[in-house]
Amino acid sequence: MKYGSLFSIWKKDNNEKRVKITSWSTKLLDTSNHWINAVNKEEEKQYEMAAELYVKDAIECIHKESFNKAGLSCTSAAICMSKIGDDSNAQKLFFEAGSLYENRANLILNESISESVWALKQSYENFIMSGDLKKAEEIHDRIIMYATRINPLSGSHELRLLHGMSQIMLGKMKYDSAEVRKVDRENSTLYATIKDLLNIRSKKVAKDIL
View 1 (cartoon, rainbow, N blue to C red):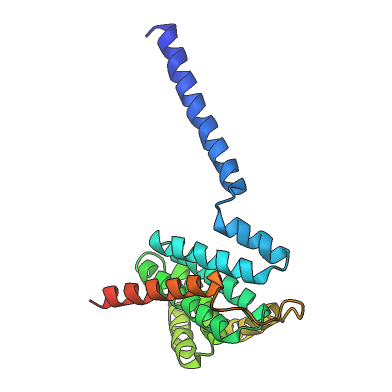
View 2 (tube, rainbow, N blue to C red):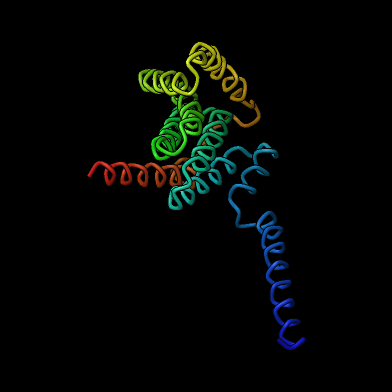
């Protein structure tokens, strides 16, 4: 092989590596990245805008079947809704987060029980915060059952752990009095985006049943 050909291969490989590095850094700074923008808005205490961006990120993740990430985005959106005093929609988003984590737990169960248990813990936490205690109890029983399969002595430990999880979440949901206000639902894109999420999820559930 000629040196010119070797140089061309090296140059191509080097360029590909450079592209990967650039694309990663660009992704972090990408203004169209809903997650990054949502985190920034939340830090600025612009909770309404942050919630909308988190919901948009959740929708994107659902389409990609990245259910853990979608669940995290729904939880983050729910916390933001709680901080502006909208408990009703916060509970809806917590419920969706619980469902998404449960979905992931079901998908991964045959591959990794430990990962499934992790997802179910997130699911349990969110169902507690949604107020659906019946569903939370159902998830709770599954966690104990699977955890015992991994380690027969771990059941009681998991039980103690679960009881403390909801208290941690409650601490994150303190209202920000500066942000509690009436939101114009007629003209707010936030509520339209939440409605889109709920519609997508209901269609997905119906499709899975069929």
